[in-house]
Image (tube, rainbow, N blue to C red):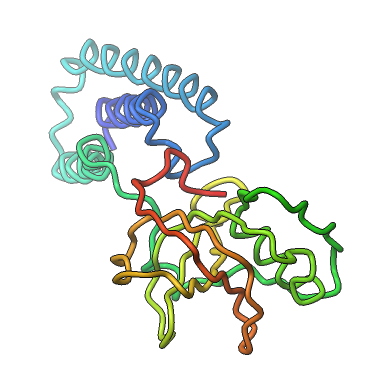
Length: 231
């Protein structure tokens, strides 16, 4: 790869990181707390790339006598590496959705682990899907009682004859290590929301015969994709 192609690649990668950090789209790929670090890294890479491009332009004339066929062939291949970076600058891919839920390993939870305290009655408790699944596995969901909880996730296809399932990904660092927590929703009135539609559901825990964590809904609202789509 030629010097100017290398420098341009670094410049565009830095510009991409700045764009993702400033626009907030970085939350589709990494933890939200990593935004400032991503911005700093992007500024440094963009500055380094810009310096390299200017240096390469100054020295281009000195390499005019390097006219070997192999040199030009390698140079063309180097410029092709810019294509995916340019594509990401122009189009931001969506967050992980239902396509990956059935094709990746989900969160594995077994009973006998942490013992949860009973939920305090008198109010609806907002809860992550991961905590819901953990509580469902802990002593068969004894900690729920009849206390209503509120869950937010996206609709994922399933073979359930009654109800449908929602999911939300857990990430430790970035989208590459994402695993999904899944909850079955029953009792919701009206038609089933569309695949990948984000919903907020309020209801009570229901012990299912097949072991899938289940929420019996009393209300359901379709929402837009959250700023932070991961738990």
